[in-house]
Image: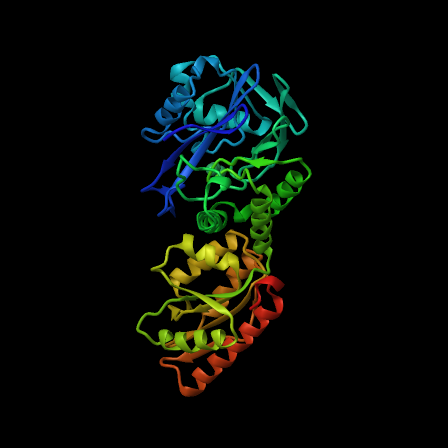
Length: 413
Ligand code: FEO
């Protein structure tokens, strides 16, 4: 781990974490980086921090040593976001010194007390407020609520044009701390972080896509030259690239997404599975890509990534005890809670004594205000007949055509 120079007077500190479920639930097979930044004028500020997990605060403090910065020289601690992956180190920091001044938003104040019992030396700031570090370095604060918690704000260094937006413009993926900048990475390495960004966005941010769209507009109004997020790489060469990515992802939430269809399927005894290949072949015959996940085997973290990016969804599942196949019901409900709206969709599957899945499906879609547009479902008793398979193929083609007509123009094959 090492500290690196972002630009004159600004340094990046970072710790990678792996072998965890992020937020206790999301797989991060490629790890995740938590970034913190030192900004130096005549005075010195640290913006954002890291989690409290074993060794992580120590990593941050040792990187300060690398920069020859004594913790006692840090005049200000700027907390853009109170989630403990960024604020957890405060306890460790307080063990080293306890007289620092925190700059944060008004809504963060009760959380500082709740999480860390910090009630003093807090300077509350709002959009338009500034902090003069001296030597021509003025930090400007901009509230960006709900990206990703209500208290979140961004900090902008007016001298260098560096934006510190915390979760916004972040991604999963451990970062090589020898080369944490887009101008020090090969194109395929940047694309790796863009893929990690898609899963990060769908897992962590997508519920707040409306807020993200507003935040992106605020950022576009600033003379941003560098974007230095709390997770992932720093965008120093082409900050517009990550702004475009977030604009696209925030748009996917309400649709359309790519000209792709996610096929979610579950099967008890292989009857519904008999319908799987026909519907996939029918979709792909229209040159529409599929992303296929079996439930409950696939983790919801990957399913959300697929569904967010897809304009269409197939739910292939049997009826179970007069309702939806339970793991599919749970996943659909989570997709709804994540506010992935306005998808073109098709339900198909087997039943034994009775149907009944439709009623529960309607309840979930209505309760979450998902506004999904479903084709006529295809249900079959037991094993699908040849006529059932023919109808499934027909519906697959209809769904693919509907998706192609609706998906973003540049995503259509
Ligand atoms: Fe990276 Fe919402 O914390």
